[in-house]
Length: 241
Image 1 (cartoon, one colour):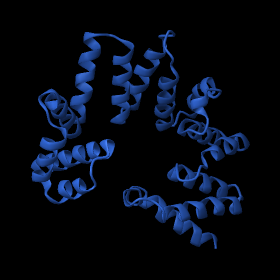
Image 2 (cartoon, rainbow, N blue to C red):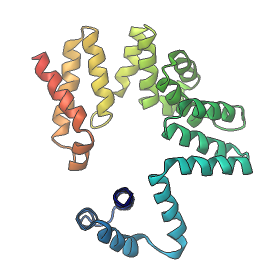
Image 3 (cartoon, rainbow, N blue to C red):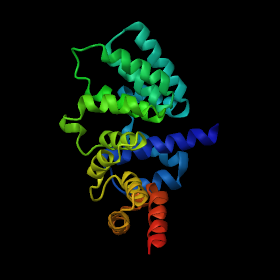
Image 4 (cartoon, helix red, strand yellow):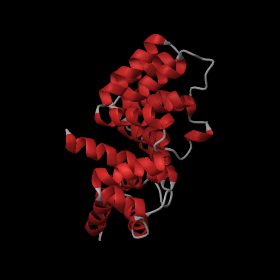
């Protein structure tokens, strides 16, 4: 338990460091001095009395995700508001309880006074994870003309759902929108695999080569984050030679 507490503490400090763009040397202090480095960082860069409760709460949620869900369930029971319901649905989605997430998103959609684009996108994510591709397509088509739908992960999931339903031509058109340089590495790998399976090998090779080239310009953090994707890209390129 002590080990996981340290990991959670370091994760929180690194997240705060990254989002607040603090000095680079803090990375070394947090990673190599362990709990002592975290304590120094919290005391000098984060902590004040007003933030104490928030920090404790965030750490608790990292260590025990179900606590976050329970808290949000209680909050919704106390105040049945649109935002409380969406927050609970997001928490269910985060812990991969997709059926409960869907139920809450569906309930939130009943409030037609709200801009439900976000809820619809989250609902699409949940339905895709339970492989209900008809529902993915249905909800995607209710927002596909929205600006935020274009060239997004939501449009990509729409394309994948269309592929699963055998609508290959329109699927490809939607999947290709995600081919944007220096972004969407995992999705572009999937796009390349889709093209290979549909005898469009040269198009796939161009995408894979682009990802390979871009990987050499990634930050070390992104190289670690996308390591498995980069390795798979290099493997596919060798196979296609």
